Image (cartoon, rainbow, N blue to C red; front, top):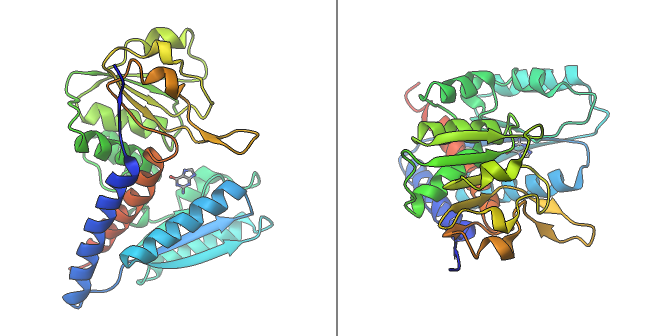
Length: 285
Ligand code: GUN
């Protein structure tokens, strides 16, 4: 058996096309152009690339991006002042602060300053709480993008065992809440989990967000499983690779995402989708 590849790049292109059509329809009705404020602090090379991709994707679908590129010496107080201004700015529908922030920032405190209705990353405790209660508003982009992928290839979730590797507040934890909401039985593994392979071997749907190249051995994949690899790991030679041993895993899995070209493009497309829904919220006000 060889797994079918989940073409995140193509599926994301379809999502972006739909968003562009919706934005064009808004503009034709005389409604306002959506706006996204993007904040990058410091010069982390990976963050710089992610932010460039996000801004470019905004431009392509007709979302105006307001870019704030700030030095790593910027203070937390000044950042909170900026967020407060953006919360009040009627041109700005969404606010994105690229993470990780330099170490002198308290990320949790900063994120809580974003108005929940503009929190297009879905990281504010209000939005995570809504997701935990299965009545989500703005949903974290990567996990929500994974759900879109599973829907697209018509993978049934109800009653199936999903194993999530990684429990971060921005990916693993909301991923587990999304899959619980979709009807899966969930197991969340993390850095303190003993005998990781025992859990992975039981997964009908495996989602790895460990950020550790090759941590998931191909031989552990249950025959017929769906494998979603969220890891984006840069090796010393510059190659980008996932968490899963791809060449071995394709022998067991029924479906698998490649890295790159799997989940990554869905994160960006979902950010655009969230920005549009944050915009639509204000149409009647
Ligand atoms: N850093 C890594 N992933 C993300 C994301 O989805 N959003 C933001 N803001 N920062 C990130």
